[in-house]
Image (cartoon, rainbow, N blue to C red):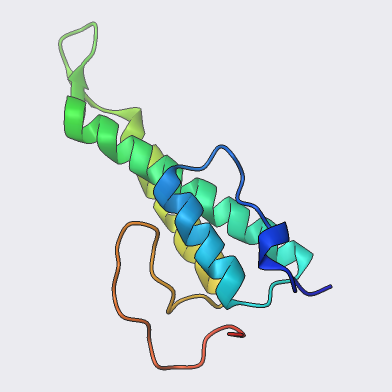
Length: 117
């Protein structure tokens, strides 16, 4: 089952605005089957998780002091790393390596990745 109507594939409501825009652009540029759309959704959610973790780290720093007065790594570092890895793997699985990330515009690769419309 190919996604022939990009309008029918609305981005999940829990995505951030920039990520929703990116999701829509991928849906409109590629012919994705149902299982690919699920992977795309997971990739978009992973991206948003990484951005949330990044914002916390920017605000609160990479460490905190525990109850014994010892510096500890914030849990958001693990969330950031895991979500970045998940995003990269999902994009690779979908063969969307040349597609811009939601908030980092850059030129698309010229290699033939994915099935562009």
